[in-house]
Amino acid sequence: MRNRDTLTQAVAATVAGAISYLARMLSYGFLFAGNSRHRQGGNPIGLLLTIFLAPLAATVIQMAISRTREFEADAGSARLTENPEALARALTRLELIGRQMPLNANPAFEPLLISSPFSRQFLANLFATHPSTEARIENLRRIQQELLT
Image 1 (cartoon, rainbow, N blue to C red):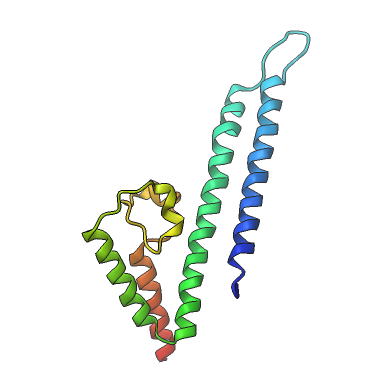
Image 2: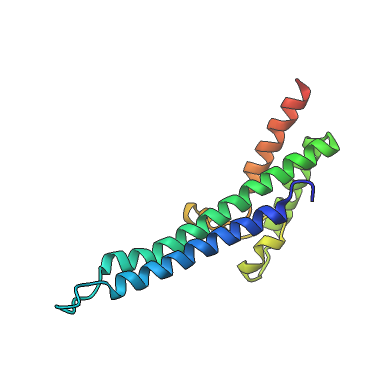
């Protein structure tokens, strides 16, 4: 509530929806564009780009914002508790438990989890709602160093 995460995510979702809507409008323009005398179709490359790349870019942007909000939530918790190292240890434990007891669930539930039990490759990271646990722990340890100085 303090960091207005819900508001930020709602704005990100609205922007992503607007990009997708504009892409759909452009795709109709590319589909039906052309010279009316010769009845030529529109630009097929432009059509493919607007159909596939614009919504994909909107999704990647929305997921990136979600990951940055997760870092902000960790930083806010670290400042509130004044013990980022304890939070880092807790994340480490959760990660270890997640590896020992794999979750056989639909990846659509990932936004509800604290850490991701699903494998992470580079391309999959673009669509992840959470940053890697290692990155979160590194960030918390950096905050710990800042608090000590």
